[in-house]
Image (cartoon, rainbow, N blue to C red; front, side):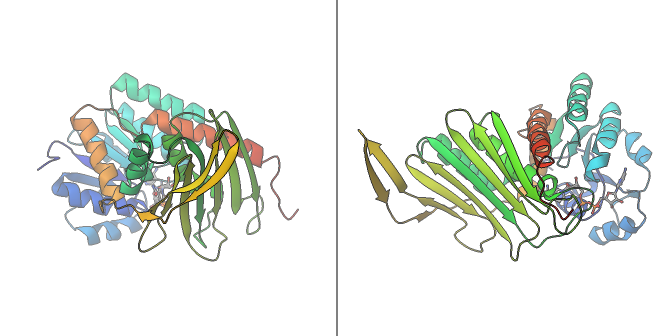
Length: 331
Ligand SMILES: NC(=O)c1ccc[n+]([C@@H]2O[C@H](COP(=O)([O-])OP(=O)(O)OC[C@H]3O[C@@H](n4cnc5c(N)ncnc54)[C@H](O)[C@@H]3O)[C@@H](O)[C@H]2O)c1
């Protein structure tokens, strides 16, 4: 078996954690050594995946088990720091869900502990393992759209609202992670505005602007107060545009040879029909988990390592500071 030297525990078997459990069981079978959730109600859900998966409500069972060298943490964000710290200190490699922690100081501390312990610290910025995003990055790096100019991402739905975090923290980590990956550097300016309607002071919609060096700019519009699901990423370059719409059934990724050329002050439009760009149908979560296991086995640095996650968190913090200066709310 490809991952026979991995012994995994999944900690947190809630809405998202159960996807980790199913995927890990498919990849590892009996090497999924434990699922741990402090709620007894998770036991039954896990036994439906397989009654052979050991279940515990006590994290200590995972920490003391020497056959477990890897953990996936899918507990709520506010618990990430404590749980990840304990696991790293117990000598486990850690894949923690996004956001890595709630504060940059905590993320920096986890990076430090992982280094001291010589263990991998990876964060579940899943979209960087999506074959379409990998394809987009490859096309941009190979010059398909020319000079990168503008990126925008809409992540909209009438979704499950949360009371412990706003829409920015719930949805935007994905978009920030993608934009950072494409831009290849940190923004020099971050600005954000939001509106709260359903719960006081918890933004349901936000728009965040990111300014990067070399006149690369981006914005992210996220909302869980929207009549239909839309996940649209548009990337404009000097020679064309890429559009990825994950909410569509077909033709999800397209290249448009469209734009304007300015030659010696004379501006002219170019406009060809679009072409559909094929990409592999691999499952992002399986790809993410496989990447984690391979990084452990081959001693490689994860693509979405602690530093990538810290940079995403830093942008979230900057955006939040701007947001809290100008949230449009009832009172
Ligand atoms: N990558 C993605 O696309 C994606 C999607 C959804 C959620 N997430 C992230 O996954 C994480 C979990 O989200 P969710 O929607 O599954 O939450 P959830 O509330 O549905 O589930 C969390 C589970 O963790 C358990 N838990 C809480 N604290 C624990 C602890 N200390 N030890 C053991 N178990 C504990 C709870 O009992 C619950 O079953 C969050 O960080 C969220 O941001 C990621």
